[in-house]
Length: 301
Length: 270
Image 1 (cartoon, each protein chain N blue to C red):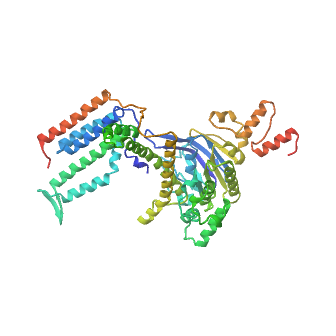
Image 2: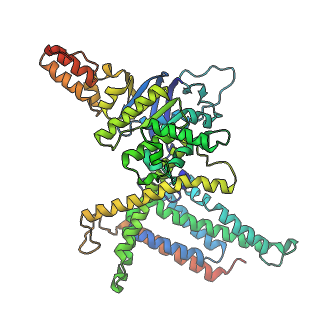
């Protein structure tokens, strides 16, 4: 599913002293098959943007216009696959089945008595017919296995008895169990230790190559973006400032720092080397950086 | 969910916002007393006038004030309907079985409705113009005499301010959990009563858990900073009376006097 957003704006609590403009004329296209990163400071509008993708936030109703008059040049537009979210009548259920959304700290949304029931929650909500116990078990088993958990071990446990990292994986399983084509994750690795972070990122790659065609992650961990994403958009004050592959994005170190964002460790090292006259043309992934450094030093990778 | 904004602080700089919270609390009590003392429409008109001036001076938009009434509109209509149908009077317009619509009944319900609207409006004016912190500070200060009988005034004020502080946080949390479950296909808007009640469970359980977690964390944070209650504790913001408060005080005194005079000289409406 291709995602096309044009001239998207959103204001929280409009017409009140609390009014805050979260999105300001955002245009962005995300192609099918991308591992897309969304960067930005707290309050830059990134979460607001992703909540539009499955219709949790809606576009403000467009002004009525006559049938004859052509659409205004900067009319907001939002297409997610074949779903046109500018239209008031959109089948949100069908949309949400195909665009999975994992919120920040998804473990706080667990509620059922057993892991099995919790993972099956979305499955039951979205299926058009009543599922048999076998069908449910099969789907839950697969979802748990794709997030790296053993069904026979945890299915009957209470989700609240699991460790933090396990809870998060169960919560992710609860979203991917319906096999969404697009998976959106808001800070999927926040609050995890380095090992937990790596596990989550590995799990996302596994999902990307198997179940979900497009993966979109919201993050402010630059290393995470540099390692994993095909492209990344930088949000600041409700606007998109950059939308580039990481290899190009992190050359704009100065602008990013001005926006209060960090750059990946590899980019910092490249800059330090450049100041000493060594130009290292790498794409800022750790692997590429090490390989090029070794090549430069005349060593064998 | 966002419409539960009933009584949420409305931050604009105004005369009323800058009044001493103690005075505003006393003013509210005086106002409620005045509403109940008012025995006819003239008395209520005086109250309404006073309230109108307060609203104008507070710079809270009228729409916002009316929204507070919208929250209890069902209660008001229900009361009015009961009174219209059951009030016994002389001039009968319509009757059917035990129901009877009389002129007196109509007047009396109009009186009651006005009274209820005024009550709701004036109490929401207090919360629109006073931050929760100021409110509990004021309350604590007003209740100080109770300390002599060892009543835990400070603790009570603390409980109140924590409760008030957490309302918006828990509301945000509810919204967040609701969105997360909606993204998993939860449906809160359709189905019969039982289905809807059951649909709340996936929100309620995470919400309760998070409330307990937050309570624990807050308790730990307070312990870590050696919070010991009211003993030897000073305040960051001292409450002081100013000329504004004096003005408002006279305004309130005039209101009470006016209403009492009207009650004495004009009698009951019905």
